[in-house]
Amino acid sequence: MDCIFCAIRDGQLPSDKIYEDEDLIAFHDKFPKAPVHALIIPKQHIATMNDLTEEQSPLIGKMMLAAQKVAEKLGVKESGYRLINNCGKDGRQEVFHIHFHLLGGTKLSV
Image 1 (cartoon, one colour):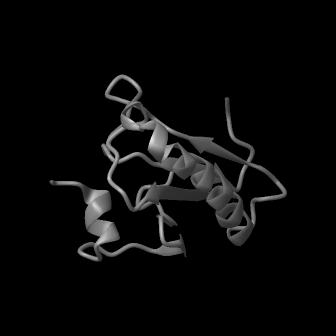
Image 2 (cartoon, rainbow, N blue to C red):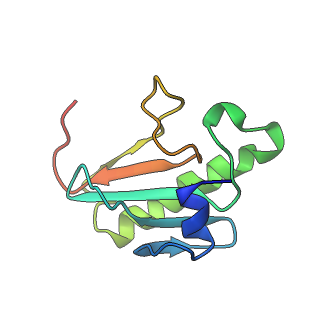
């Protein structure tokens, strides 16, 4: 498997971690699109949202709760933030390992 997020998970590539637990990692995006731009990924490799199974669905809820913690650590919990999941090529997914972008730190455009 040639997955950049799996390499980050395994410590083969460096990341600026914000949060980690037994199932998830959150880290700063290397190419931010907003003043605050973090990525939240599961440690388990799941290529896209469409590949998520019923058994894995609690992981998405856990990712949402982790987003609250990350937003608080980054100082945008109260002012607001956006969570984005891109799914598939036409959805502009670039890394095929399910993840959420957490964007904030400014009034985001539509």
